[in-house]
Image (cartoon, rainbow, N blue to C red; front, side, top):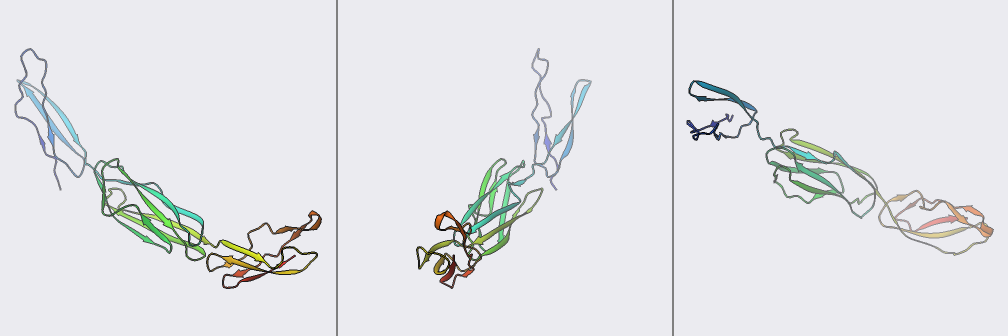
Length: 226
């Protein structure tokens, strides 16, 4: 353990007709707060003071504890940023950023990375789902921070299919009937609804309820009932 080392000059001269002088104390670094008594003498008079020596401590502050991407179209990427700030009185070193979870990646920082007090860097977390449904992961940041040496950020997002095309055999119909429609999506998935409001305009402005087909991406047709 480092001990406080305070050095002061053994003798300080006070100029003629002056009411005081100045001395310089040199203090080495410490790893814990300490107090050091100092005493000055002039003839028979003396004065004591206590010098407080504080340790320089590294500390890392992270802007968020979780990142939620919400719904993201499959095979497309969404990105959110995390700010990492050195808020201590000594440089902090980020040693590792371990990532888990399908579809998640982290960019923007090269490790190990040392931040001076007050310095900030951004880590960019990307979510690119390749499958439909919810995904969860974690980003664990390890550093020499004096407060939390290991911080865990939770990650979440949901991959959703996107309709890329829709075509039907008939462009208009009179009365009731069925029509075969080709549905094209951007990835393999199961779709439970067609994404519209569930109604179509009939003759005379009447609102006709449509059928909401469930279509596997391997299929190419869905029945459209009016």
